Length: 185
Image 1 (cartoon, rainbow, N blue to C red):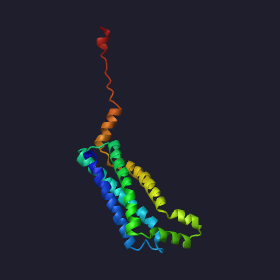
Image 2 (image 1 turned 90 degrees about the vertical axis):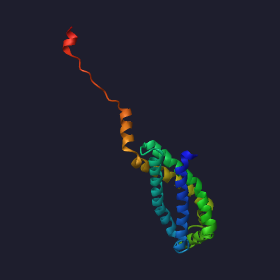
Image 3 (image 1 turned 135 degrees about the vertical axis):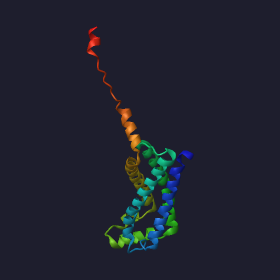
């Protein structure tokens, strides 16, 4: 478990950041019927925070665990472990948000969808369920996380690791010239 302690630390930080983000959005009044449509935009903004968390986590792994030299594959795997842990903690964030922070969020969303759109009642009920938010959140965390981790891993890989990898893939060919005088004898 010590091998993944850095990833666990950053996944816990991401979970706490998500909870603080939800508290901030609620305190700014975006969980009311008038402003609930902007919650999606705030969720997209939180992805910038996640990018920073992934970068800092992979960078710490590079410095402390790999002594400053990390390949793309190792950085990607470290970020992937972080992504899976963050996705594992995501239902906890959703549960706390929709049961403790804003217990009436789903009913407010349902009312807003009914009054502000021409969506049928069955569709509003389907689009304002905890299960849908949970499923979408998990799939979005995994898909966004994998893509971002791949990009962050590319930029955090060490130049030494890239050079040594190129050296392994393309061995140097040494040409030997034969002396013409030795061939005649």
